[in-house]
Image (cartoon, rainbow, N blue to C red; front, top):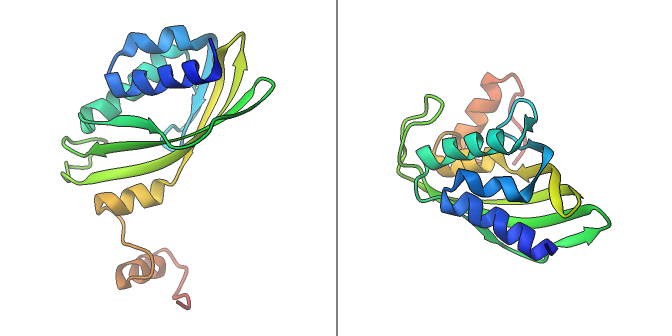
Length: 156
């Protein structure tokens, strides 16, 4: 499987809501991390369960490639974006019905043409701003939040 076939399959798995689609892409010892996981997820089934939480809250979620995938030996960086509308409650957050676009980069290690270690990097604060959960940077709301957190006011 080529790098493009592997990551196209990864994007199809997330976009197609097919939990079984992760199995052929992942090494049996796969580890996955992103800003929403408190510890690495182990195994394709754990990744599928994580994806299911996304699919529940964002039923129209889809993942798209945004640039060239870069590889060096067993390491690959793959830029992408997730597009979705928050339609259902997740982790105590009521549906906002807001559309979000979250850009991400996957940094992965491969073993025998399968995903062994996956780290997804994305702006969790930016996603929360798009959902209306946190204030936009530079606003009075952000200043109030910073004061409450003990950071005081910053110069704009």
